[in-house]
Length: 185
Image (cartoon, rainbow, N blue to C red; front, top):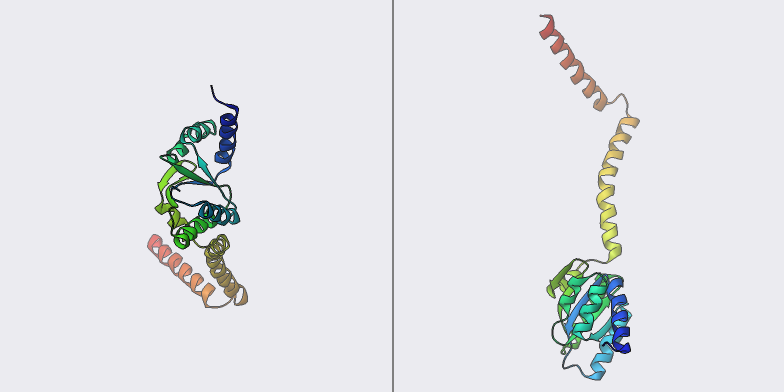
């Protein structure tokens, strides 16, 4: 019979899993209390939470949240980092901590709804440009063809009798005359 505390733990984990845009399963054994506090503080600044979980309770919570594949994060002693918001900023925060702290904290697997990946995916996410830069790049990709089209229309409108239209009309007239000659005889 499950205890009240376990039921509450599963409910809390279920809520965290359901809200998570990404979750990271990590090795934490060997961290001192001070290192654990430093880790949680660094992650909290990025808007994420880290919890040491009991594997069975985590698996039950993942199933109840409708994200059974997330249960793959729970293998051996596990700390799970739940990311409800910006996954790129969180990935940067986690990788920066791993590089600077050089302690026992080591990501093992990364879960994003529908897929489980190895820890290398975390590094790939951390190397993406910031959201604002990606939006700028996308806007630039849309604007380039539009500005060329605008330039063409500007040229036509400022010089309607210019070579552009004259050339098109001359070519079209020549084609029609040649076809008329073929048909007439």
